[in-house]
Length: 427
Image 1 (cartoon, one colour):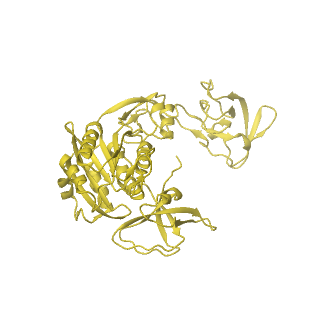
Image 2 (cartoon, rainbow, N blue to C red; image 1 turned 90 degrees about the vertical axis):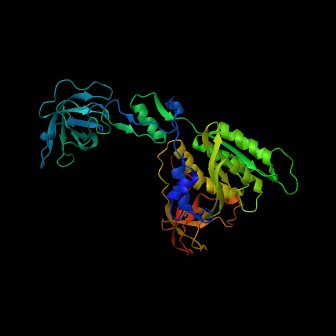
Image 3 (spheres, helix red, strand yellow; image 1 turned 120 degrees about the vertical axis):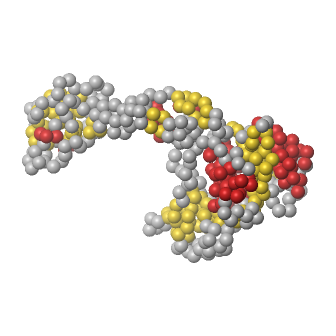
């Protein structure tokens, strides 16, 4: 890994005290290097894992010319362009059979089912609903309902043997697993799971089961962030709550660096927080403390801790619940995907019309919690969840996406289009 000074030197206009959100992403892309270790797993264990190397198709897909619809396989040259075509039916061909025997002669056809091997000599399928059955072993194909080559799938048109079926860096979803199964591949080589340690910091933070006391809060970050980590498919090492004590913080960070590829913490990185938190982080590695031009989530620590002869990534997130979630989603999640070898593109935002005015100062990126609905005219519209404070966790529950008001953007009027990053996808 490069040092943080080397990375910062590559970025023009880098200022850790007023860092644009886009610069954070560029910085992390240079900092994080993918894991080199791989493992081979069964398809049943491969969901959401990251492919370690290209998968070459061991066969043509489809493995033979076949019918794309139920109907009749025929010779395209037999079709008459301006009048009906009458053909003699030789028999039927079903999916799963090796195919029809002898080549089909001119003036004849074969009843065929979807997926069945195309008979030799045939290059076209006319759907069954278009033909008229003569009742005497013949059918009539009306003029113009089918053209030569229609409704036939060619051998190898999806995948040719020896060509990449899937590429390294792809995160394996349901469709990719189905594709691997269709090639007869029972297992796949993936990058090993990243190990990520997490702990919350603060004397005021209570774990579930502890009695409440005045001035204390229950630890929500531990549960939201570990859940977000599990959604990524990483191995989570939960270190609980660490008090604002230098020795305890150092012990937790040393344990995390020795056991994990990355460490995520929440709390202790804001301006005015206990100085020993930052001092301990600096002492154990190469760490920078940012003030990002964003809302919520301005403070963030990023660095590398020394752990058993290797560098362990550190992400110190703000303590406020919404700020912790937003900085995780915008910065830590893509960094961890990169760590796991994923070639993940940035999520594509929806465009929706604002249903209300939104105040916004240029010079920072804002992530407001939004609710996207469909208007009466069918267009998408979005409104905020109301109060947008960084401690209002309810706003993340009610929202179905983040309204992204970009760095140079100003106030938003009702009817203006804005970008929205949706929380949930279809697959």
